[in-house]
Image (cartoon, rainbow over the protein chains, first blue to last red):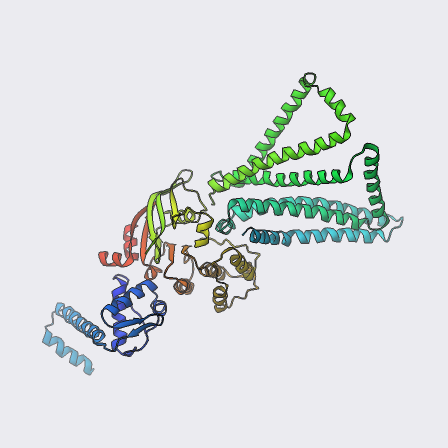
Length: 120
Length: 269
Length: 232
């Protein structure tokens, strides 16, 4: 898993988001053990404290749970993680439409354009 | 912690001092070996005297290098980049100074012992035995003729030697430590401090001599000299103890200067 | 989070310059903190004061409530900005040296890290390449189980691969109860691993904030803010 972090924004929420994506996309199955805080920190090239904070935030959101002495696990119910994925898809779509609106295309024109682009 | 400090300090000395001792001993043994081929030829005499000169130079170099190494070790281990490590060890400045001084002293004593052993080596055989006999005779003579106790003499001599070596090192430490208080050119400042000290001692000695010369009647100097001449044992004790006491006072002063400079004014560049 | 380091009105003057201008600073334990500032801003002076290598002109510096001394030196692991090891020693001897003096030194950790770099213990320090020598220094420091790690410019002048090595070594050995203070002027290389940033300029502390606060408030990276603050 490649981590893409934008240094211009707070890192902790970005890590939460990316962990949600990993779970929603099936990199980690429900009930599966996550990489440890330190491993995640090393992979992402960030501070272990930031990862710790992100994991704690995800625990509050009901996405991860911790077992004392053995680490972090994915919750059985991953709807929240999937919701993050959906939100992200929604945001990206909105960004795309906004950007093309600014280039003078209306929404129908954009939809037609996407179909044509896909056929090519 | 002091034990560890000693261990690493001694190790640092052994690396340098030990090879030097071995070379000196080697020169001595080689010199003795050359004597086996004794004859009247000019070439033998040239070789023989060269070996003697080489040995004498070796002895001087041994003493001087031991001194220089002791001073250098104090400087480089504490005040160059190595000081970054030395002064971040969980060790007090007091411990640093004492360990450095003690090991430097031991190294100098080791050099002296090594020189004595080398002397025995280069004269090994009849000459050596004769020298020992002569020394024994002189000791016996001083005891029977003057009543001077040989063992006491040796002990006094060793104490005086030890204290003066320790003080010599401490003097250089104090100069280096004071030099460190300078903003820059700290080695030059240390040399400067040493020469100022030297100058002050010369002035004090001169004043002392002038006082003795001018007031020798009032101070009963002539009577004192006569007394000392008639009491050689007392004179010997006096010379040893006065030397030792003056050195000891110097040691305490130099130590205080070194310690307060390091403890309160340490500023590594 | 308890207080680990405190500077009160800490001032250091040299012949005709003021290196630190009465700074007040508190660091908590459990943080990776960047001490960020251009060259000559007072970073190294502050670090040397923490390690007792300099005497303050005014004010004081306290580590766990104690002025620099034997006790604090047991708890502070220091990586100077220049090479400071006796170059005649072998790697094994320098490890022995650290083990003898620092009760918190973990010999096994050090050897494991050296093994990974394929540095043999019997090699003399002076025969190591500059890069490897710096890595050995970092390994020695990070092999201690200290309360405060003070790393002075650990990534200055190293290539990107070595920089990654330094960063992963720090993360790998980081103990959540300890604090790591890293001084640097190369912020972009290190900002992802920081919790907190301290900006220092001309002997004054300009700012001390968590890096996520900086990103949130300014909408830019710490590096971008740094370049803005220290624009000349």
